[in-house]
Length: 245
Image (cartoon, rainbow, N blue to C red; front, top):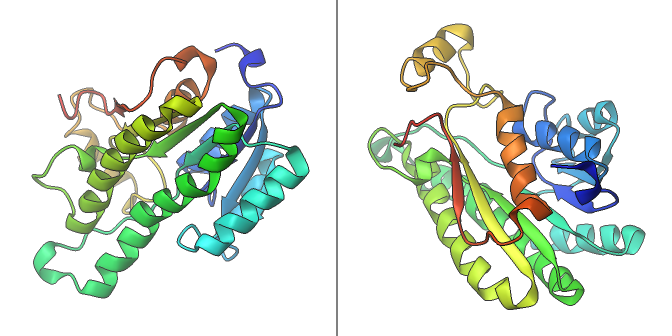
């Protein structure tokens, strides 16, 4: 993708709480392409320090709170005049099996991974509709494409993101707004606990024999956000080295 496609585009990315995460990788790449990046995460996270290291703006945001989304959108539009791209990246991992889960744990996963995506789309869609353009990229997962071996609440939330992506894409298409999703496989981020031993074990499950790096996902997000994918909407791209093939 050539840099001019994103020069001065205003991009909001959620879940930029760690330099090793997918959100930070996307923020770094978008900034390098000339975008004006607004990185968000919980105020208690390392998001502000991460954004400072990346040289992008930071705004605190709890994606589960509609009033915080409203304030964020008003702030970004007030300062930049528009929002061209939203990357719904914030997510919460939960490996608790169905029969061991309590409702409060399930609700928290759904609040972040599913409701947070809905609130983000709902907050930026009117701005993009009025502009007549915009691109929303939701972070899904291979857990939203299969059942066997997947963590119950996390998979449920990601299956929902796939559905919301398609419905929103169809509803917003007449307004020039595209909505797509990226479904990563196993990625070397802080979400994976256990160090090299766990990564090696997971790599053995991947047909390519290795886990992904965050930048490899970020490049697909960049593609879906930019003009190179101008006729793509309502789909998800798996970044999983044939794990779901």
